[in-house]
Amino acid sequence: MKILNELYDVVVERKNSKIEGSYTCYLFDKGLDKILKKCGEESAEVIIAAKNNDNNELKNEIADLLYHLTVLCAQQGLRWEEIEMVLKERKCLKK
Image (cartoon, rainbow, N blue to C red; front, side, top):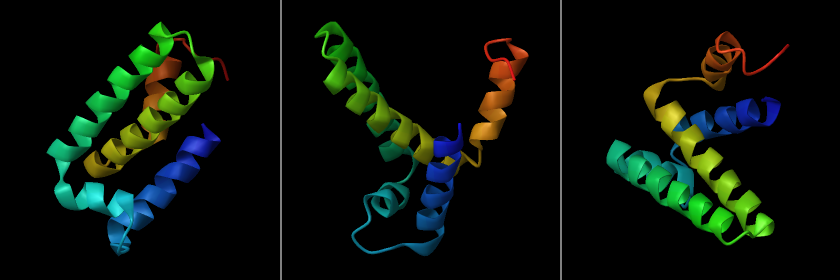
């Protein structure tokens, strides 16, 4: 989860700094509906890559989805540690 936490920190910095030309800033400027749309699009692209049995494409699409989910988390004030706790509670992860 370390990389996701690092990504989250960068995304939050962009949310607070409004860097011109930043795609992340663009998503925050457009708001929740745009962020949700991108999450949906990336989810569909993950499915297509998996159906095409193309792991190179799949890993890139999963990375895109995780990025957009990170933006969604930052928008909603939800940290990855909170999601990790849910997974641990479900016994999906062992410490």
